[in-house]
Length: 312
Image (cartoon, rainbow, N blue to C red; front, side, top):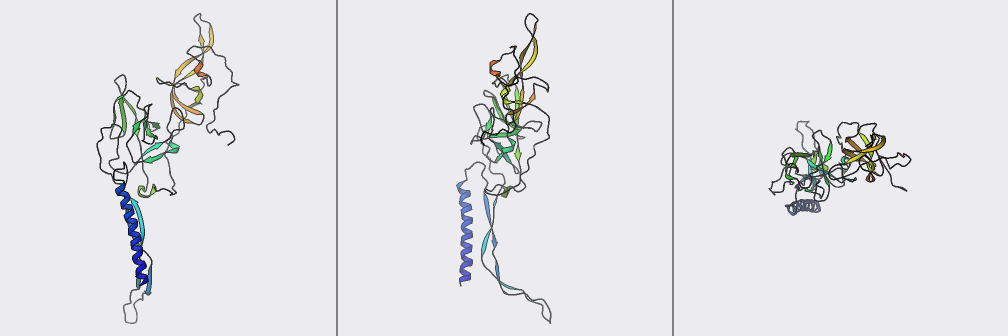
């Protein structure tokens, strides 16, 4: 009698778990990007009353006599199939229509923000918005991590004032700029996992492999060397110049640059300067194009790719 009661109670407890999972699915019926779950059961241990016997002595043998001791929870799996799509009229709302995948998002540790592939988090919610500066973001303030046409990590920047923003089925984000020219801000990128139904469980230990692409040599400068402006970022390169009377002097020329990822105190310069150029790294806000300068290398800003706070 007691054995039967305990078996029945195990069924009640396991079915209660199934009801809890179903209730959570119902509660999240309007949650963007939510994936429902299913509950599977597994039989528990069995108690052997009589062992099995092999054939012999004119008999064909007999099977074991076993009594089941109830049921236990087998698994709780996420169902990663595509959900129902809904048109919102917002050009920055996207959804993953077919197949697995997660949008890559991350917080930025630099100003201005740059791609941060080492601290990426993942989401299925595609109700994106834009920041005041025009960066594509989640509703929680994380920057959407995209890719350039060449495969490099980048943030999706749609300059304020742009029109006809659109996101194509291939993830390409386009807009019309102030000159009425169609521009590409980047491509949305998706991350996939070998077991999406079980990898994203709080508290689980996982091993992740991130493909960061081929390495490339770039010019790096202290971040203090860059003059940031809405119309373009620039640095001041020390050059041999001539005054109106033709007399040579050492001065600076303003050079617009294209910046890449930042690491610590350093920032990569993808174009605009080349190895061997002498660049002003301190006091750039005091300079103007053609200003005469005196070089003093005894005062240098921080230039550590992995700085640590004092007394840490």
